[in-house]
Length: 490
Image (spheres, rainbow, N blue to C red):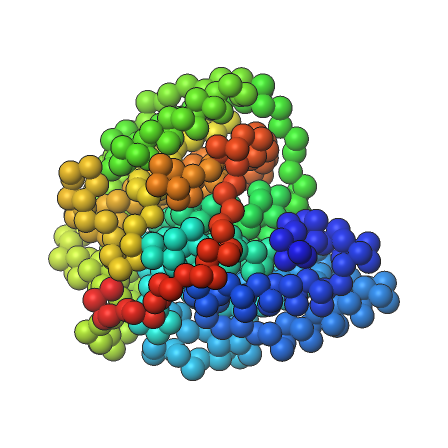
């Protein structure tokens, strides 16, 4: 089926005249119609507009014209990012009927490169939380078990990709929102070094939070989309963090010899919460990867303090982002946002200042390690997917989870230090749910990290235990899980 092709392969066939954009769009829309009722990933589908744009793309190709590297490719857009003429709700009833008159920067670049917006993907309210549930649309179910969470906040995008509704999708990441759903759904997510992908709509001038990014089923496809969304405008960029960069090389990654790779690994980043089943799965993957790479050795990495640092810095950012609207929040408003905001108001400035000092120490620690290794590998998420009716797991290996971020330090710690990270699928865990690993690279050396990830992806694909898992679509169609059964407490 055309919708099951990688973006790179679909683009090649489109350019060669062996596939039409209309055929590709129709295949994607057909998969959405068939599977989305079981998973609730696509909250708005722009079918008529997508078909019209696909027909125009075919006419342009027939006339020898191409608008760019994404010409004719469908792209699903996270419902946090504004789409001109297509409803953008932020997962909130307050914006249930909001139709923007202009595209967000990331969307404008996708359209300018020939990409076709096929629709919008589900998120938690205002995109905060690692469980994709909101009161407007309900929950997005995991494609391997719709009763369980797909992760978040880019959960709808991850599920749309895992079920072949689209070859490309956008996401964003505060403390893991690209990487967590990628790991929970068996796809690839990439959090670039902050500033690689311009974020024109940011509300805080300088921060490692609020990163926009690509999601796909393969590293090559992620790199292709990154090469577009990392483009700079001809005029000065409106994002003060967007440093000078030529993004075109992202589209062609380097060949990496596995025998030349030096990989460091840590199963818990120095003591953060990680369940025993995830530890066992990770040890198995490290043992398998170690057979192929030049060296694979444990590293002395202590990012456990990042849990507290993240909570302090996150609180600081949230007050900046939400102070003008807090009076409009109703009693059922996203409890993750409310908890962080209320904690921020109780936090002394001295605590935030100390957290910033500790952050610098952690950054220097990771900088030193990534100078010595081609990548640092750790698990992507501390637990297997849990029921989406839970806001977050309350206990991990007998330890109480104190807030909605305390079980996410594997990803949030990397946000704190600002290094690029790839979430890579690595088979299934003991509960037959997707298991993913996280690759951490040198800051500002994103292309090298993606090249290393591509090499490891190819190796993982050769082993049936570690190959990218694919959901059972027949079983999904038969699912009877009610994804709309959401209360104001979720």
